[in-house]
Image 1 (cartoon, rainbow, N blue to C red):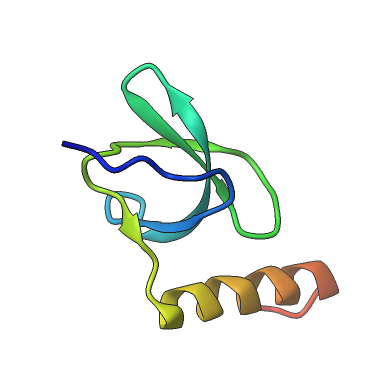
Image 2: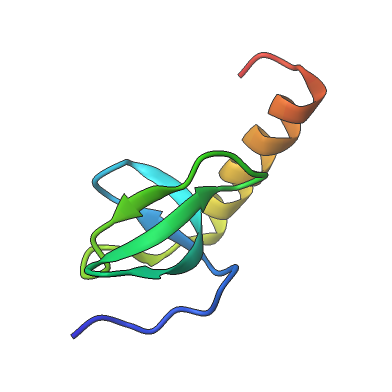
Length: 72
């Protein structure tokens, strides 16, 4: 059984090894978007899980650095 996610929830995709913002479900996939915007990707909804506080912070810092032009 897969969990129902609310749009905007930050989740961790272990296959992509990154945090994404849950957008919607498309057929068998969960659609995730990088924190701060960008191209969506498909994830297996059975594998995604809530992002930990550390994962959320790291993803948010990367997004801010990307917007400011600071190298990662």
